[in-house]
Image 1 (cartoon, rainbow over the protein chains, first blue to last red):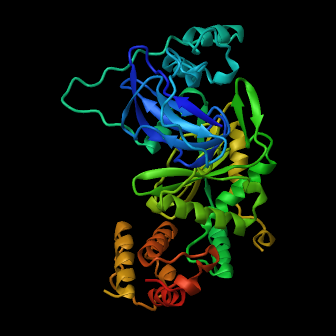
Image 2: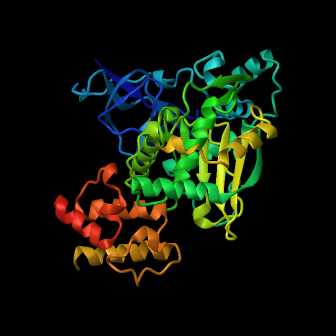
Image 3: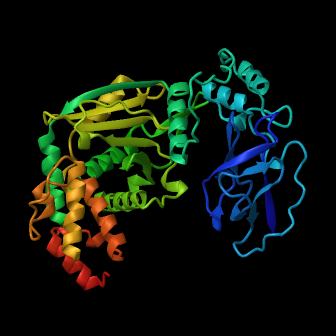
Length: 369
Length: 83
């Protein structure tokens, strides 16, 4: 069976929206809740999610094209072979099914500020509104901050606006989560480079590797530490601790001007060789720009290194629902530094120091076999 | 320009981005040991090599024995039918 995905209304005053990005290309299987496209107006953007499991068969407008609210944006099917109808069905007049219950732009901001998940807030009308969020927060005895700031005015200077790329929007979302939801703190230690450098060099020689596996091996070590730590592989949601079933290790990889956080899923199940193989495959996918959604989302803990640029210190942001992000570097003076931004709602400074101290030492030799 | 010269040119470009000079790199010199490219640059070299010469490399093949020098990269092309 085939199902239309209607174009949602984002702002009351805008009867048209622009298809700004596709997260999934037709024909691809999608899961219920998976973001498939993003639409925007001058004031806000909105991620359109699949309402059911199936296949994205066709996207009607081209990226960048303006679309009427309520018109068919895309077609989903139960199988990849289904034919797409030529005539589009009439969409719901006011609020498309796709948008029903979805938060308004202001409600989204308030949800982010309060660290609330939209799915837990009861909806009183067609859309989840600021009033709904405030009512829920009051019931939960959560302090409601001042109403979200009005739309920021741009500079009164000559210039023009540019649309953000998908990667830039992803970075913006991460930064806002870090600022509005997490309780980030940072600390760092020096570590003795010799032990890790010898370990990585021995590993590379044994496996006849082309490049140094130091960063991948340290990230693999972090995955092992995460699997056994009580609160490291967790995140805080609505005042409750959510424990991930698996360690999904996020690792930053740079491609030209863009920094990607690729995710090695179920990293705790991989030995060092399997982990490096997976990192290499992700690295090649980044450079070829052929990453899937699963490879860019769902990190539970993260690792980044600025040793390439010999930075003295860098304080990473916490990606959404990541409890700790390790920041590795080797300075111009050849000093090894391990820092960490951590979510203080989950981890204390003592926890973070213990984790970094454990990471400062490579695993026993037998673990590389 | 033959394959070896093209590979050399790419290595020089990647090294330049790191502020290093690879112009004196010899074709039989072991690239990782020369200290001209870091791990990220080596991966960029491999991805460029696959696209430029139309070969696909298995992860198991990414060893110093296959890609450790310009000569070895040219040999790999000849063994795997690169264009």
